Length: 114
Image (cartoon, rainbow, N blue to C red; front, side):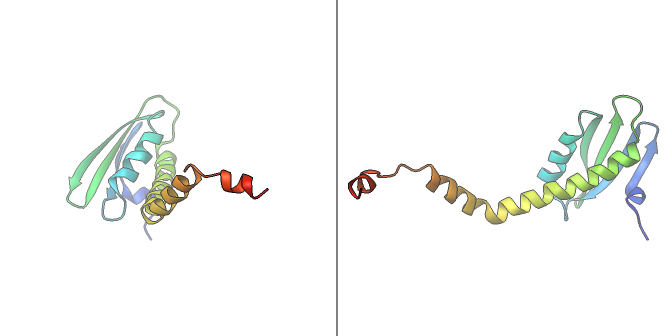
């Protein structure tokens, strides 16, 4: 059975790399997730091959458990990917609702009916 730790490579104190498939996760989701961790890590997202990227983590300070943080990164990555997928699927509906909600309306008909 594989674990998330199996996908972490080149792990040392304060440094680690993780390979992420771009056939499963969009680059936008990967970048959004990486951004969430920039307070604790210097992060670089770089191409590995045509179907994956390498995310390189370098701890900014001490006292971080990089393995735990990468597991949290994996959870956040799923969250960001789902959000992107929902936006792709429902974005037009959301835009239509917002446009209708903020469109000018003719209140005169409603006033006259009172």
